[in-house]
Length: 200
Image 1 (cartoon, rainbow, N blue to C red):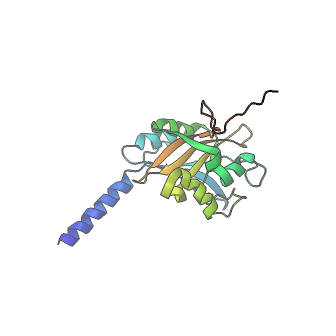
Image 2 (image 1 turned 180 degrees about the vertical axis):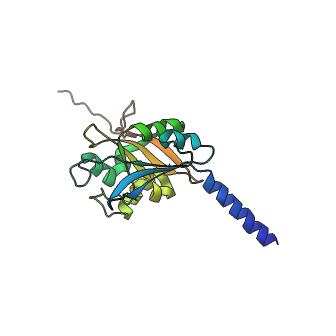
Image 3 (image 1 turned 90 degrees about the horizontal axis):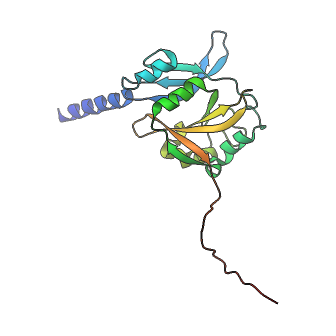
């Protein structure tokens, strides 16, 4: 009897954890003509239903097509090269975006693509491989496999800037982190090497 109650309680907890999610994913959707389109998928629970409602007038789930990304398929974008090969050396977390409405507005109004560990735009490292996985781990830890990079596109749909790193937290919800380029260390630090002046 105790085992049965334990199993039932675990099931209820798992269902409630899954049900209490604001989740952003990226994937492909088959079109009526047979071709596939890249889409952003957003899932909302009761507490976050207003976000799905504002994105696509549906309180529980949303699918928004991502725009065509010019010069993403290939090696011409220096930004994508940085993201896929040395994102942890080039960018640092600035802060977590605690106001989810800011992320929702971005997803609803900006031109962007979401890149994941298995992105078809990764021409630089093995797709789904350890190299890019380790880079994402620097931002999302153990959730690197589900991490997403939100890359803003310019007016002609070319990659322009990394806006957010999206990670799943320990209860399966999407957390958004603003990023900033890493700056070389500056400031009033004491010199580590002595200066020797020779006057003649």
